[in-house]
Image (cartoon, rainbow, N blue to C red; front, side, top):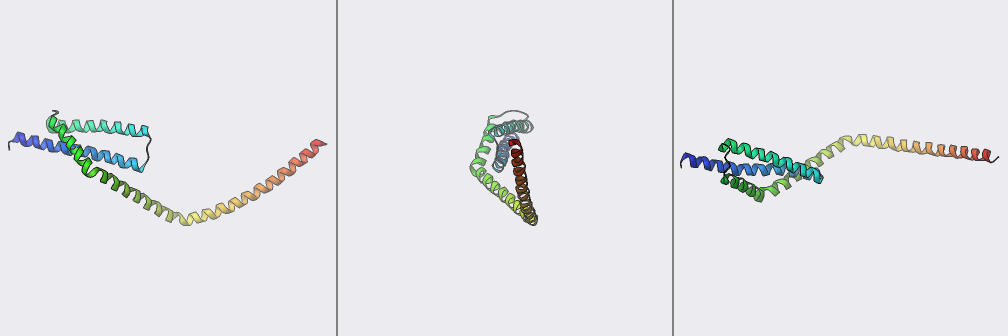
Length: 158
């Protein structure tokens, strides 16, 4: 194979890889969205930023690998990379990653709750007695206020 053809094949393979990389980055965003719910406006802003950064990435890749020449087969290569990754791996990567992250978060919550368990019992005990004390104060205050108002009513009638 001549050097020019091998460079074109190499550029085509790099284009396929670049398309796959773009979708891998988008999958990271999808995983983040599944873990933390986003509003529609925030999703739109993230998508716009993603495509701006992807455009810059594509421009840099074409500039480095092909002196900035936009070639039809490089665009086709990126599309092939995106389609192949999307059909073969994308859903599995997102589902497995989301499940793993949720399990890790669940484990961290369990560890924190286990560490805080004795403190939770102590706080529960304190709050229970504080609640009783506040009920006692409320009853006494209500009785005192009722007595005061009845006395005021009595003196106002005279």
